[in-house]
Amino acid sequence: MPKIVDHEQRREEIAQVACQVVAEYGFRQATIARIARTAGYTTGMVAHYYDSKQDIILAALRLILKRIEERLQRRQGEGDADLLAVLSEALALDKQRFIECAFWMAFWGQVSADKTLKRLNAWVHREYMRLFERCFATHWPRSSRWPKPRREQALRSVVTFINGLTASAVTSPADWPAATQIAQLRLQLELLQQWAEG
Amino acid sequence: MPKIVDHEQRREEIAQVACQVVAEYGFRQATIARIARTAGYTTGMVAHYYDSKQDIILAALRLILKRIEERLQRRQGEGDADLLAVLSEALALDKQRFIECAFWMAFWGQVSADKTLKRLNAWVHREYMRLFERCFATHWPRSSRWPKPRREQALRSVVTFINGLTASAVTSPADWPAATQIAQLRLQLELLQQWAEG
Image 1 (tube, each protein chain N blue to C red):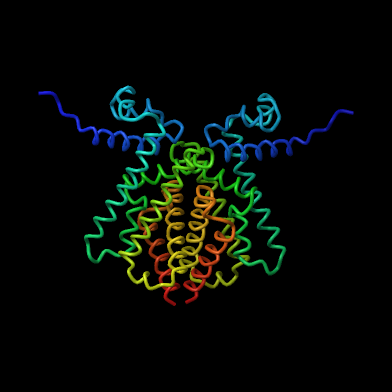
Image 2: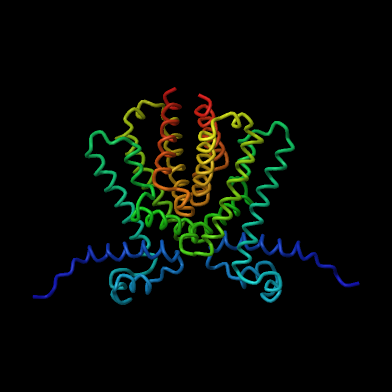
């Protein structure tokens, strides 16, 4: 009987390897050939699943968003999960999440120089904001009673802060162990809550 | 009489062009040849001033730090300059500062994939932290009365937030006009001050 290949799974596997390769070698040097080699496939095999590097990058971005979303939803099951615990899923706290954050940084570093990536980023950015908005609604239910402009400013502030933590943790990992990242995010959330309700 | 060339000035001019080229084309595609062409010099002429691309990047980093420092010091002359006005000098509020911020992003995007850049970044990071520490001391004199751990956490929080604003403004400029960046930083400083003193 011929071996049955799960094409969806293989596509995802290649996207996951692309994340690692971008995180490790940077954006430009993450060529299709290198991604294929790292995954243990031929370039032709990868070409069977993706038309271009752009395609793979898009799949990698979708995969990271999906992963974050899954982690957030798993947390949602825990009734008492607070916003800090949930948002921590987006921080570079372990190896897998460090790779994801390093991928973001490599991607961001290319956005201003590349029109296609700029469009891609606009889409990612909207998805990302929606994701965090849902987190606020579910895990910070009191935020629904804040005046809308306050809620929006708090949301912007949290996303800005998480982006800053991503940049710091990826570029200066020794200065940003997990506990420090969490402590800083905890303070940020506490300050915003006091402000929004005070 | 032979034309007198100010070599220091020319070195700086090349570093400035390198900032622009990195911001516009990304890190990898900012080759010496492209930097030379943009500056209107031959590659050989640029090689007369810099041994390698690494060398130019280091000069560009120094130049940006020097510029930020100069802008901060100019503000220091104004007795009533508050910390917000001073720190705003580090944000992507106009074209020149947008180029500097886009350069940071391109640089950060390469750091995790390149050991030499990692070392360079460790140095830049220390310089940058010192610069902001001096800003706190001069323009937020009340911060000197805060307990040291609070002052350090506030400093970390401000730098994280500014890094996040840099990432947001460079990758989603339409969402981050100057007024929005300043409003978010103002809120951040107010919240930290209340916390540190409350």
